[in-house]
Length: 308
Image (cartoon, rainbow, N blue to C red; front, side, top):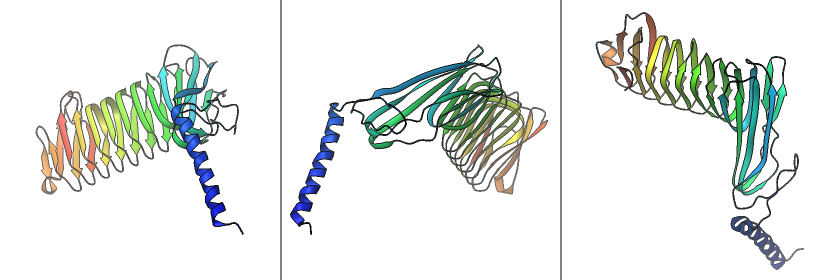
């Protein structure tokens, strides 16, 4: 039978060892090493540093289909003229981290390329691990994103399809259809135009600025929606729980029906109301299209002008 004093002594030794490791990390005296391969353990120093930079490219032609599946990476996509898809990036570590990164691969497919990294975690004792992935591709590329820790896309002139589990999405300077959803994360659109724009999130706010198209479908189950400079004809903006504030551009040509299950509905300009002020109808331009704005729980505010 192990004595009580022996057990206490063993615990003290373990505690001192842990304190020593933490002190080395905090003072920067721990030795930093790069990942050597899958499953290779390492301890980072207490200073932020770059581990495993990578880069690769493939010639694809002017309009490839690009699949992105990198669930733990902050992905930035920028369209540039050319016939190549290029990737670069790094993993940054700070603190005590044990494990190895998932390698990023760039593979040719029958109609383009696939950029992927396994959804592989590392053990963060304390500190953080930040994975960055930068992608440059031709403007006419069609993007299909199935995984990212965060996704930012700019300059595209073709369709964007994004199905994200738990990530924010930002799209700017875009011309083409958008079909995007996130289970948990905000979505932001800025300077976007397309025949059909459909974005949704189960939990997160939606922000639209200078968005145009004949058909717009925007929905969040839980979150605020703000939109400025909308130029639309048909569609809807809905929130299950949140304030909706929309400013239509003067060029909009639609009839807007706005409702709230629990909150006031206010419209600038001439409108008709019913249901005690919780439903209002306002005509923009000749009223050609049909557009619905509704919140299950929250106020709805509608104005007209270039921006509010």
